[in-house]
Structure formats: structure tokens, C-alpha cells
Image 1: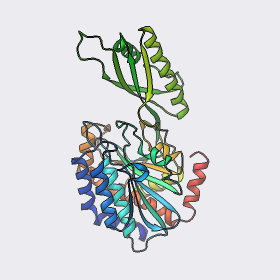
Image 2: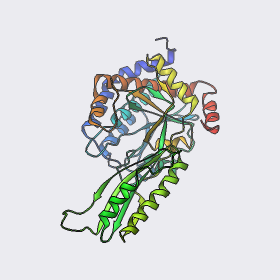
Image 3: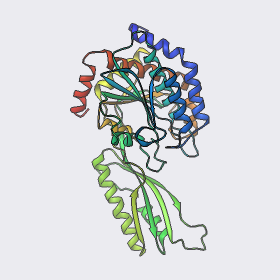
Length: 379
């Protein structure tokens, strides 16, 4: 493979714990837990890390399923982030079981190195990334509570249908619209119809939603109708404008039916992901050492609270390919792909690529300084 000695040792450690990582991924898959309710998943990861010598703090930032596990001491402090929440009805159709297992594998391998690098490896267990949970956005809550203070960088890897890095994700607002009075359902339906083409020509805005409450019988005119929607845009500024226009269209629909309407967020605002050129290059180079070639750049219209992290410190949100064809996340096919043979190989390569990138941050002089220079320069 042509790997330096320290990286060869890390790869061996990931291979050694591979059966454990596969078991963790399967267990999370079989017991999917929604955001802020990931009690079994969080405990499984925290207990394994504690058993490997990590110092574990549970209930971080007042969230029972958030944790911080640390190994080593002193500066620099580099964080590996783990997600483990599932989707309603679809379970782990976004592959968070693989994310958690890969982050665990990278951390265990780094901790087991005979020549452990100076500094501290921090594993942050981050609940409720999926927007289905009320108040979703565990990383935003951790940021607000100061859990990222003093960290030199934060890194994670997400499954996808290609190996990629340096991808920009969208900013997103999760909103609930409520209409009250006679004609409430009609007002909500008019509102949803009016959302098409929400953004001006120079901005690409995506809006999609569902009606959660709209009456039980066509014989009865419901006095309340409730819808939930995502508004997504490439940047936070574009998102702010789109949210303002969304409110205007709801108000217009309500006025036309002589109804009262309210629009409010039900989860935390997700900001766009800001790639970091230094961290992206390291991850891409390390995947090459593993025989993978990562695509670089591009815009994805999915959203993640990792975007908020990237606005606060140097961050990496890499991707690892689990599929043999184009495949969308949030589908049952994607969930199965993460457990397939290709998915198991991706899990190990994600742990290795992530672990080697953290190793570069801790061992290579000037790496983190370059990452911070990129961050201050806007990328």
C-alpha cells in the first residue's frame, strides 16, 4: 500500500476491530432510534469507548444521548463526530449506523497505536441530526453549549453513492405552518401550491413538505390544518430570503380564506457546510492510499448540522461509497447498501481514512495551522 509506518499500524488496528465495528453497525441498524431517543445506541458507543480507556462524559449539554469521550491529553484537540439517530419509518436509511461504527473504529485505532501522537482525540456523540425530531440539530445544541470550544478541528465521514470530499451542503429551515378557522385546510393547500418557484431566478430554493393534520372526513370542515416543510437554499443569506417569502405566501393564503396562520421553526436552523481545503486534501490523499479516488467539490442540496460546525472551526464532512449504482439516501435500498459487502468495506475504509486524517492533524507540523488559515480565508 505504500503507507507510512504509523498509518500501517492504524490500518492494522482497524482491521483487528473489524468484527466489533460490523456488530455495532448491525445492532444500530436493528434497533433504530429517533433523535434525542438514541439511548441504546449512545450507550453502546460510550461503553465501548470507556472500555478502551477513553474518559467518557455522558449527558453532554443537557442531552441524555450526547456524550464526549477523550483519549490522550493536551493540545491539539481533534474531534471525531458520531451520528446514530434514525429516520421515522425508514430506520437507518441515511447510514448513521455506518457513521457511528466508522467513527468508533477510527477512535479505537488511534487510541491503540503503540506510538500514540501527542494531543487529545475527542469523540463527540451527536444526537438528532435528522430533522424529524422536535428541536433537531444536536451539533447546534453542542455548539451553543460550548462543547466545541478549544477544538482544533472536527471530522466525520458519511456514506453515499460515491467517494467525495469538499462538497457544499445546503442551508435549511424546518418549519411548521398552522392555519386556523373555516377554510383552514384550503388555505394550507393554497399555501403549498404557492411555494413552487419560491426563489428568484438567480437562487435555487428547494421546498417540500407534508400535511400532518387536515381533518378526518370530507364531510367536516376542519378548523385547524398543520403542515411541515423544509426550505433549503445554497447559502444562509438565500435561505433567510426564502423563509421570509415563505411567510409572506402563508399570510397571503390565510388572508384569501379569511383564516389565521402561523409559521415557526420546529428544529434548529442548519447552515451550509463550508469545506476546508486542507482537511479535504488530507482525506482525499488518504483514500488514495486505500485504493479509492474521491470526487472533489460540488453542491448537494441535503442539509446537515455539520454545516453549523464548519462555520465555527475547520471541519471535514467526507463521503464514502456504499453503492454500486446511483442511490439516494433516505431509502430502504440505501439502508441495505450500508450493510452489504460493499458497505462493510466502506465502513472499514471510512474508519481508516478518517483515522489517518486525524493522525495527519496530530502528527504533521503545520497541518492544523494551514486548516485554520483556510478557515479564516473562507475555505
